[in-house]
Image 1 (cartoon, rainbow, N blue to C red):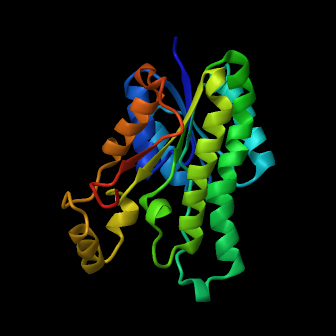
Image 2 (tube, one colour):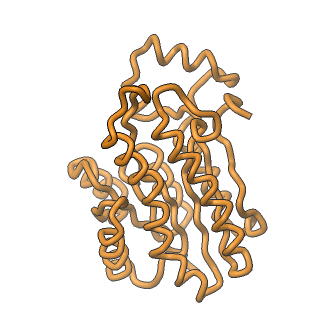
Length: 240
């Protein structure tokens, strides 16, 4: 059976790597994005993966977006990869309420919104795979990221609770917590700061999007059907 997978924030970086990997092994894949129309169009042209635009932090927008995916691809979403996220880094004593709420809404509230769109059908079918993308900084915290670290830590609690509720229904809910991964975002970090980060990674390098995608691929596969409520840390030994 060809399973349908939806990757949020899937037109660039880690999300794009996950989407490409899933398609390459035979999954029917759709991705969502909010900003960057040109990037999304290039991604769709290069991969032939359909792209859909909506705001994952808005419940109504998620309803309409998922309905569109159902219409275009046909059938329910079997696999949900919650990857969409933003950063608004700032020391807490300088952080605005807007910077807090935007990051919490996009990175954490979106997990609730998207899972609400797919879990009922998964429970009816007694099958589903959900993978939530957290972060090493959700495990250990990070200076200048109280908003981001709080959201990514919240994802882990959400993952474990939903896993408990869903296990008897054939649904697994897991998380992947990447460390520093080579993407356009990390490439934009000043070289001196990037080297200091690299020096703190026991593996001596940044990870690749393909390595994160491999972890996701494992979690959604039949071989991981007995694995739920867990966190795979893909961080080169940076935090254990």
